Amino acid sequence: MAIRTLDDLDATDTAVGVRVDINSPLAADESLADDARLRAHVDTLAELLDRGARVAVLAHQGRPGGDEFARLESHAHRLDELLEAPVSYCDATFSADARAAVDGLDAGEAVLLENTRFYSEEYMEFDPERAADTYLVARLSPVLDAYVNDAFAAAHRSQPSLVGFPMRLPSYAGRVMEAELDVLGAIEETPTPRTYVVGGAKVPDSVTVVEHALEHDLADTVLVSGVVANVFLAADGVDIGRSSTDFIHDRGYETEIERAGDLLDAYGDRIRLPVDVAVERDGERHELAIADLPPRRDEAVMDVGSDTVDAYAEVLADTGTAVLNGPAGVFEEEAFAAGTRGVFAAATRAEYTIVGGGDTAAAIRKFDLSGFDHVSTGGGAALRLLTGESLPAVEVLR
Image (tube, rainbow, N blue to C red; front, side):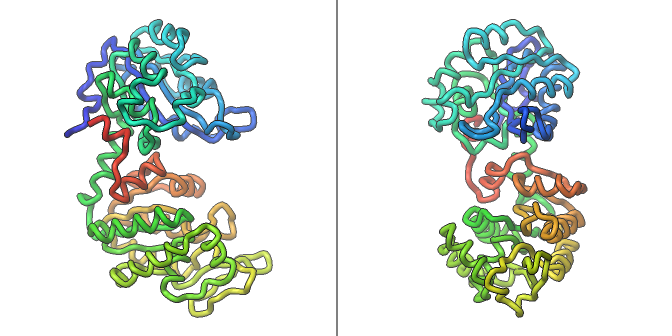
């Protein structure tokens, strides 16, 4: 069943609840340290306001008890700057004050309601029918005429503000949600050959991405890096050293070595492993060929080496579609940023490049790289789609 979009919504003088994901890094004074996620939703909000909607924006910030669990006042001020229409702030989510703030909007005005996670049920997951009966959804729905979900980055959650409103209101996908589903939900339609670049430290999820991509012929070639590469190297019989091995075992990833071994047996010619790696030796970056492993006892593999970057770049130069998911090393440390920077820059040579969000998108921003066709706003949600799983907040829109 098709999902309705803003093209299907008559927004004129309509009270629209819009769920966005503007969960952002904050400074010590709770001001925004990065407004990238807010800017991502500007098109959706601007379109609704330009068409005369009265917009109530719903969003969360941080997790209960966390350092970035904060009010949304600074987010409202920034949205007011980014949008030509006025955006106010209400320090309530579904109380009488919140409902009055929504009722008091004129056409073309917006209000950002308070952090949905200040309400305890919002940090729990429910099936849509139960979510529709939570206080947030039941109390706020009567002052809304329609609901728009633009929060792709949170679409893998089944929380009230994400799955409850579609049970009570006509519901639509916003422009961010629409674009993400059009790209990540239809990778099989992108140019071939396809190369998946899979790295990072979330090994179980990443191995599942590799498995799904190869089993469903979505990937012609997989290039592995990061901790994921260490797991595949170990599965291939390479001694990656005591420190890197301990890291894998301390996180309970022993079974992932077995899974990686099975994938190498089944698709070995389509999975490319690093030919060299970088370790920290005497406070500096030191590169070792795979044949020269293991490193010293206290040295951990921190990045792929320069020969690996060159080898991966050759593959990417002849690629129709490159899908990036996870950095090649500890890119936060400058000494070990070269692998991620080099591989990601090489990926822009592909005809079409998709970035899977999360740490991958963070690395691209850090290195100020450009030339990517689609940079996902979601980490966990993008990963779900890349592994063939459904997203609760998307399914309820159907």
